[in-house]
Length: 234
Image 1 (cartoon, rainbow, N blue to C red):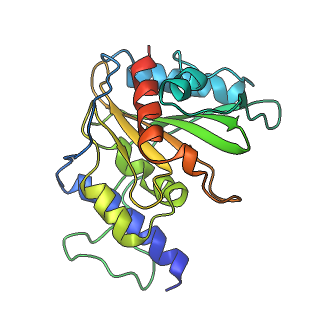
Image 2: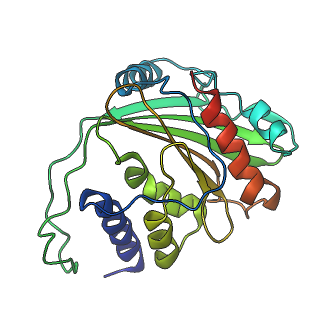
């Protein structure tokens, strides 16, 4: 099995943990709540609208410039426009349980990869000085699933090895909390109360694919900015 396959499987196992009833406790300091302003249906409807319509306005009152300033992060903020848009939306109907890839080792209690629920996702991309930063909002109609579905992207943007990913998954934020990823601290993850049933998570992350991480957009300042964004939602 290749290293890339092992990383993907690590993310699957971490995501499966919540399905098996793993604890979702957190050691994050501080809280961020939206007061349950958003429902899954509202996020999904907005995501589908953004899939069809080009936009450079992040929805639900999200203001990255204000959040960064409040966290003490400087730098000019502007939409990172690609193909006429900096905001994108998408929604999926979920997947049934799937067979494991050939050669994959899995726990006896997990004969198949767990099913995934429907979800809706909105991404807002910005430049902050020379860096690119993304806000990602993910809503799921089932409780305690959103962070799990975000783990592969959190692993990539957070530059996490398998042990770091497992640690973050185990110590994920509870609703109303915001946590920073271990290591270089380039991803902040907030869990937000929803209206009705479901789960809602927000990430604020550097684009670390083509550039070295900017330490000014990491660690506690990034966590505070994500916490502020979570509080802005309405």
